[in-house]
Image (cartoon, rainbow, N blue to C red; front, side, top):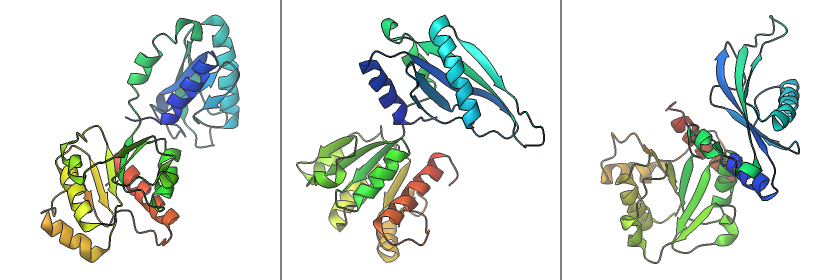
Length: 263
């Protein structure tokens, strides 16, 4: 299971301001519910929050319960039942726990570990077309890392990490196993091949390359990838878009489908 890096940013921001935090997590659902088991929401002691678990009315209830927890320092369970049985909504059970700055948020890290780490996307290339991919990946809450020989920082300054290669072959000695997905956008056959070689030697579960169908067919034959289920080329779903925003959307949609084991 993965969670959004937005939660980590929220915790860091709250910690800098010495604010306390309540963690709300979905522990069980019966019937149709907006938020599934594992979804979380964080509320700090001045009423700021991140995460969406349901309706405005439900969120107001969480704010109310959070205020109580900041005083009682206890953990509670809350059960939300639909008021209207014909609404089609199910029943959800939530766990609410408080963590305090003065205690250095004791046990918060241990609690978050069971939700997993943010999904990690590795991007090869730094042209103008990369900026939209990074933006959408950031909205998804993924950790973004960009690798390139020539770093065009004006197009990738929203990425979480930038790695500049001194030599192209350096990528072959890097451990890429910590990344979940990768997209090659370098637009250079030799460079693409080297990046692909490095990725195929790793545990990365999604490997996408931007290019036309003819060239990608050749790439598939060159590397004997006909049965390689991690390989997606041309990268992205066919949603009919032609600009870089649409292409980025199609790529992220395909990665999300792979992440959720839909493809």
